Length: 385
Image 1 (cartoon, one colour):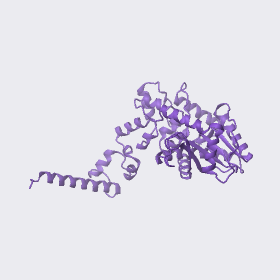
Image 2: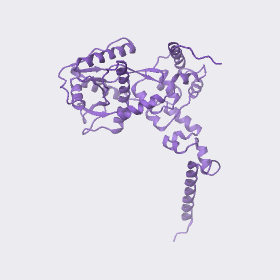
Image 3: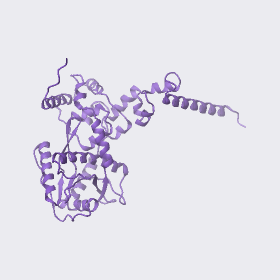
Image 4: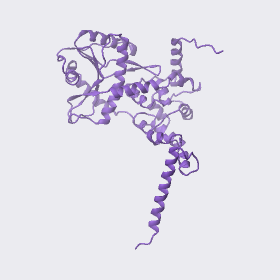
């Protein structure tokens, strides 16, 4: 009779951390997860490859370059510099302009933020900063005034591993509620910004909302309400003046929470890998490729805008003929047909169950195509009048 696993949670966590260090490479520093990576991870919860690489702190950009498939994913240095300069302007003078925008966009019925506290959140290490942030939030909630937390540190449990997150700012309202502030450098023209960029910012802010809710839960039954309307601050028109807009992230929060809950535990993925697997980018290309291929991926075209390994995974998906590289909607329509070869064979009547709706649709499409081609060939062969 098998004995129950009596390993303590602390021991299991220690073993997992040791195993993740081995996977990353003992001498390779860990790359911390951020909210952007978590939003992308939640958008593709079935990708074990991304889950274990992010959980182990692997620098996927370096890994992609070592695999011979570098990606241009990420912000340019110019965009980073411009974004940092704009954020500094928004937060100047103790965040007076930012708090004015928060008052106007999120809480116009509250007293104006003529005076606001900006607590010092300095502490040693991410754990220390997380604890200091929680204490500052608790004190600000009791104060009954406006408080601005500049780059607080939050922790979120992701598939059994803690991710430390740093939002641009969190505002504590006079009623004790908390709001996330996202500062972006893309413009807001005539009061509206690019919907795709706003959507990406909303998904990122939703991760911060989830992390804030965990802080609120730890504070007990009298914890304040975390607002699901966040403040998006962007340059107004073509100037460098800040403009604010309230964005409701309830939908993004619900989707992100559901997808993160579905993620396979990193411990299970790591336990299924061979002992000699290592993702250190300085090892021979053949060994590195074999290590990456040992972890199943779930590539889709959407990965090109969200993951540094997208080019490598796309090449592998094409080489194996899987239909996932054609897009998730098409993959869903094809049912049990998982490769291009299977799809073509079913369309030609060489395989597949004719009662399968996907097979029947493919054969109907193939027949219509053949009919159209025959009709076109007939018209070309017909003599001119």
